[in-house]
Length: 491
Ligand SMILES: [Fe+2]
Image (cartoon, rainbow, N blue to C red; front, side, top):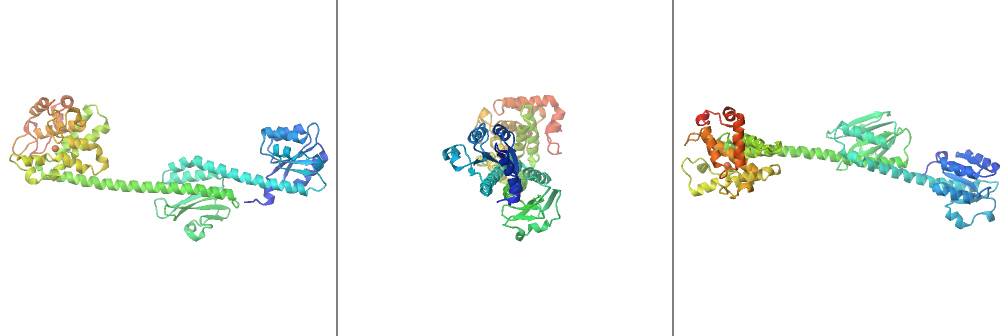
């Protein structure tokens, strides 16, 4: 956008350098009348120093001077300043430097001195136009790089007040203003307004109506520049406004648009992220409820083993800690303990509850339950860590277990831990056809099973835990205390 003349000239500084003071003062008076800021210098060397020390947009330079000529002055200046626009003033056309020199020294034009300055004024105006174009481009570049610098901050903002304040901080940092506001729906249907600084009375509600926006996304009212924010479906979701106290320039408008686009995307992302998280949480809860229900169904089917999974999970987690595993590993084993027998849901009641010895095909059905359990749990990714544990909990250390006949450390460590906890609970609990073992007898079985059924390291951890806690505490923590459940001497 072209600035109006009055403003454009006020912001342009000129140095006029001529060894004739009458010429410099005449030029100064002429251009100051037009609104430019004009400084005067009559010594070529001093002139070079002034350009070095001060900012000038345009240099009006005499060609023929003493002790050095204008082209030498330009040569010196171009060594440290490539940006200043230079117009060379010559006494007569024949005395002008050759065109080759003008090009080489990057001189924007030359003027043949006369009593009238209108030609020189045209040349200066042409320079002013270019200077403003360069300033606009630089403004965009600065704005863009400022937005790019702030992108990580924009995208790391979290929902809520913190986010809104963060957006206003950014807007004010990038576009200085008297006041600012953000209107955004966030997670609520009715948009909220966050405002700070000096703001005129504004109709915030009105901003939500589509027809109020100029060029689709912009509004300039009472010195405020407001840009519409859209959601992921391109609907109006809010706006970001700055009180500039004047009509905004094209640069500020484009800049705010870029910022608003980024902020809109960040806010939408943040909202979608929160939405997905909530959905995920709901799904997880629903899945956990389903799995819990399945687990209870298994325990209800087989009343004799009621509470077995909980007890196994508590003892297995304690053994894991005793083995030196960290909290996360122990928790993983505790969860696997809860669900290790979930595959029994598929075993017909007639087989699962049969008091008589099982037929071979019935025993084959029982032996399917670790694989069925693995299948059920594999449908839920967060349970992936349990799969080898559930599948392997009936493997034996010597390789004679099922379903895969794995041996030693081929068996998941969690499965080796659960194997001990599972066997212990089965031994000390009462069954309709037998009384539960005494603690001593069960411990003896664990000891003698080390190296064949059990991992000796887990067996050792079991004995060490029993030793640390003592018999009473061990029984209190890990054994069944229901009237019918507790076995033998544990009562
Ligand atoms: Fe089992």
